[in-house]
Length: 276
Image 1: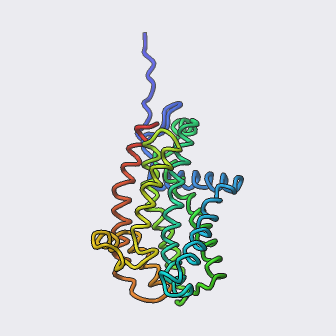
Image 2 (image 1 turned 90 degrees about the vertical axis):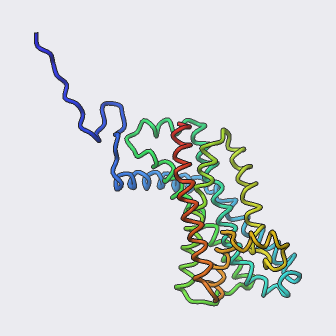
């Protein structure tokens, strides 16, 4: 009696019904881009998903400019030049809150159960969702800058500086959105994710130099605001759009961005594996 031998599947390939154990970096990036395109198609079919990133910039811009411009900046025109670069950072950061809520909704509805059974990189669903969020950042920036220009904001530097400012703003959102992804994977309901992110984002943005000079703040708050990632990126935006020093605040902002990804990307992946 002879035994029938079944050859073992080579390392890195999938057995029937199982995803591959190892996926190369290039293949994983392709998976993430494919799922990112899926997220963009969802936005195209449901453009109301962009309502928050198109309405909130207008509300903050109109409210702070016309209510507080003369009191805080001496004149509306002067305050607008100071405010708009800060609002670019603030609204991009706020736009990053939604990705965690959307991912939490997908997990709750069982979408990630299908992803788990597919031969894709484990990180692809999260990275893809983050990449799709670029559409939200671009929509936010376009709306904000168009309305600000109509109100009198003027970019006082060249196209190179302007392009660099926009790319940095998007990169800032992409880095900090990993906090939202981590919270989205950790909590059980989309409402809880949005609530917790709101509690985190609002003090971070208002405790900065977006709206007022830190010299007007109490010493304890000014000490934090001067090194806040929002303040540092706001100063970078002002340097790139209005003219002025860029290297110092940019270096600080880049350190914050790198540290945020270094901490929260692994945490998000841990929470994702634990959740699904």
